[in-house]
Image (cartoon, rainbow, N blue to C red; front, side, top):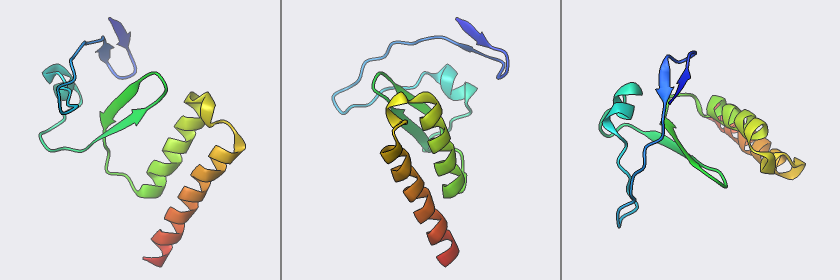
Length: 102
């Protein structure tokens, strides 16, 4: 088990089976650690090698899009080409435009 001092939590792997409907049970210890409640939204991000599941925070759409872009550029070498970055920036621009129109 690895220990993440900045968050005060341990990180360890758990193996689960996917059922016929594609569902996976998140262990109770993880749900308690992240304070996940029934019917709460979570965010899933797929990369080439993994699926990241995290608690969905109630952020403004633009803030979330900017954070996603920052993470993508830092962590995902496949998103470092200019055309993909420009697509992400266009999405952010559209969110900003819609926020000012609404």
